[in-house]
Image (tube, rainbow, N blue to C red; front, side, top):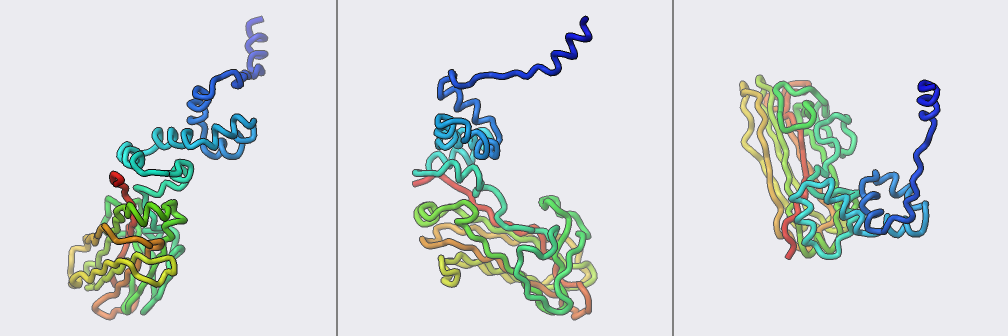
Length: 267
């Protein structure tokens, strides 16, 4: 008797009618639903559900649930913010550079190979701040690669870039083989809509790493502040080579490139 009842209960489905629930309560319930289900399924339930899913309040709550407190509090001060776009794109406090360590080969980079070209290798020494322990390795002539970041496509918008001009943090890490010297250079440009006009620029050419070095990584970083209106793209370019002119891949080892936009209090 007991076993039979238990088996029959396994086939009972729990159904709850959410229509009598007030809008503010339904809003809170839906805020815990994954975004894909909200947009693909919940919007189709009824006109009422569609209005709630499309409301900025729902996506503001989801940002509050899932974002870092600092990012959310700063976003609150930005006028006319699109909370749905902010939630889906997450333009702040994430790396806008794709494939920063070479785990996806040379994909997402425009490369100009020199010598024997670029190669992906495991790090000789760990770089603890990196998500992957691999590097792009250069050869005996200049090897250059560039990535163009479309800031609007990544979730930023014109008014924010033109009037607020959030800080843009860039960082790169490079090292040499212990038995071979190398050189490294970086150039990062903030570009206008035509992708040609340079609004602001950062360049660095650190001292060469000598032969018989310790193989440790060195960081190059910069913060763009107050760069002026019109920025729509960022060009991130770096290059390297060895100083011994050895065939193969003995040049600078580059990894963990990053571009991170951080918002501060608006106004």
